[in-house]
Length: 357
Image (cartoon, rainbow, N blue to C red):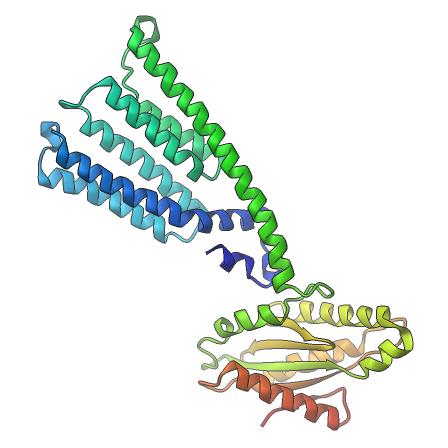
């Protein structure tokens, strides 16, 4: 669902371009509607083939089931493809295949201009709001129009009825394009609003790191299958030492500056880790490394990097409590053990890393 895209940690969402995020969002938003349209249209085609007489070439159970099975398989691929490009491709394939199937059904006793006109207009009106790009919309509508509009003569010899069909179907195509533009504009506006809400919901407004809600949302997935041979993991709780003194002595602006500087250190060092502001002057990191020694190195690297920060009000330090991930241990238990280790680091003199037992 779109929430899966919007709930990504801010640093991961920032790694995607605006276009990539919008494409992913619209794909996940449209997928259930597109698949529902495909299923209903296949059911409708099946009823149509059962009720009305069919051309000899497809008047039989095997040809009918072959057509319906092919369309169903295309719909299944459309529902399962994970990428934007794949989703668009399968929509194009479906519209073209469905239009060809309709044209085949209308080549027998039902071969009448009004049937073709009605179905052509219906297909164009239905598919237009479900398209994602102008090119996709133009191609699909043109394919439906060319396949289903029964104009087989050159324009100079066109009858009055055929000219009328051309004008009506062309007008419906223009209406479909306008419908697409309105739907696309609405989706773009909805996406912008959803992105703003996601930033409020999942990002810390001061440091721009993921917030506690974001961490708790993504930590279970991050922890899945950990630890395992060759990959260790740990939860690290960080607390800025003597932060109250910084606020009381230099003001809250200085405190905010200190938090942002530490957040930048964590963002730089923890690009492959799950980093968040836990609250106040506390941060949390869910780190992975190839060994316990690698986790120690990461924690010490964070501590030393904070020590090297030089801000107008002086140097900073952090205390870090670390709890190694044990098989089957819940996230809440991990956080409790890391928090206890953090208090142990504070009691041992601050500016150090303490490991939970």
